[in-house]
Image (cartoon, rainbow, N blue to C red; front, side):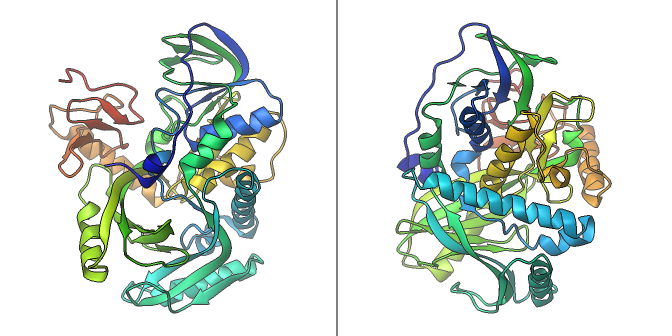
Length: 438
């Protein structure tokens, strides 16, 4: 099972590191966030190296639904209540700026970029559905953003209400990645095995850098930042249908386990079936059941799954890795909005490693308060799984692994590491295969 982007795109390849190197900035991770950081530094003439353990965009980036939008669920009413108007406005401007940066870059890249309106909806039977949509529209009005309330959508079910963001976008992320990466200083198959203050050790040599950006989806350095407490991972599933419907926009349910819709070429992409990694959920069966009921003449062309890092408060962690690591930086916790957040992260981090202030830094600070209800849920899940009896244990922090029958993988309910049935690593934060793998 592979995504439509993988089938419709060809990425360039890069050599592996084979000698010691010295640079101003080392970027670890070659997904969209890492590539955009490299691109921004390259544009500024800053010396950098990007080290990717396998191949660029070989992880989460290839499995996104590739929406570019500043509309991230019903988040703005929540942000105003939690952080105040100023930081809520920062979050909105940072993501709108990211959208415009994509729009500018995509003008010169063949990546199927399309301007589309985006909608977040609440189902008719969802608790407080219409009220939530109305409150979100009111919050955006307070922030001076033009958003519209809607009570009907071109989808095969009734809604209580929706909020519309005009002139957002969608694209093919791998075609875009191919376009921006060709001339970048990238080393593939160059896994960072050890990391100290200014030195990264790989099998091909050591890289010495003044500053280091960790863009590895889930950060792998455990002794700083407490990311293993501040995040958990969430799986979601996608099917691409031919002969279904042109919905002419991007749509997502405000509920975490709801469904999303967008078109690509002549296909309808339906996302959903979500669950916390290591737990049970609807997976592809839920999506296929929906498709058979509402699009009985459709044919499934592609199916794939992805994984998202979910933060305590719904806002990514972008900035200094921790208070005690002034030369380490991080981009993680993009929730379900990895494309827009990747660009926002690249803009912010390019400034920070250049010792320039960035107006959006305060709202994304990784050192902001951890005292959120999700923290205690994360800690509880970790304790339960650490105490569980299991022969298969995650090498990250020792949690008991759960067998995922649908995807034929061993999944960690604590922090989201995944391994194939033979014990080979699929998803981090673990950095190696299972001991005694077959």
